Image (cartoon, rainbow, N blue to C red; front, top):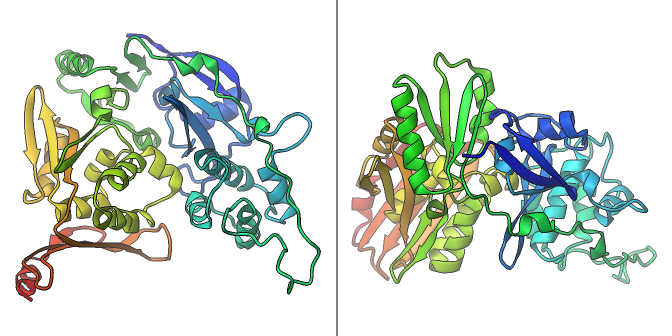
Length: 445
């Protein structure tokens, strides 16, 4: 297996040999490359000051997304195009996003400004420079500002919205006409040719004193690596990761034995999406964003709208782009994914050294977390595409928007005028409960 990675930052190619598995992209950008526009604030994906844009080529065009560099492990930058606030604009003028933010009085101390700019840049690239107000709100909900009160930031960014800015044309407004220059798309960095057809021929293996990480490129490589790890040291701790948050939290404890991580993000079989008449099957290597996009594309509106209502208040856009749905499902926190899975009677497919097990929502999901600790790996989920009834879902936190959950719920009811069947799942900070007695009381009502 190879030990080096290749990536591009702001148009410049980089090759890095054996990066520290616990090194985050934010620290590499600041300490090694000197790009200090990427700030380090909370280091847990909350403040958004470390936001950068990651692009990866997916035929026929690159896919751009904003991520938290403080949570993004350096080894996952392999094959990626990384854009920081220093890379937008050109030598003669700043980017139009920066200009409008400044002219709109959207910055004071300036610590959060690069993160806001890069979140907006990612949105413009995603929407082909034609976002809506709702998309702007969702894109920057993961960026915090302690100074401005947000209003001038929102108003500056509304000028990019197709449905959001009157541009001073209302005759009742006592002001001069406001004209915004057309966006110069030639200012955008071109996706590097060196990464367009970049397909590593083998997996990646990197090591440090505390941790080793293997990034297999096939299921066969995965099985071989897992077997080697277990044969080398029965006391070693083997963890499966497909997003980067474990890298952040690993720095706060000293394991008594060497940890060995296996990253499944590069295994093609775990990034597959399969669609048949009844079910949508999603690989475990896909992100929450990719899960939501596929549910929206292939499932009934009742299902996709329930996912939308739940995910609207799910963390930040940056975390949504990077975190895997499998990690969210089996994490320690009681998550929104489990509520949706139970309500929809989703099947979770898991494997251990060739043995495949399927868990449904009728199973105790605590069994899933126990199986994860025993070395089982989530391979995929199968959820129904069609619903003979209605679905409702919601997430309520301590404050409006993304915040710590107070209560989540998901309800599926079957029948037209009379309820023939139902599944009602709620969760608080600690437990997920199926309201069996209430379901029985609702029947035939």
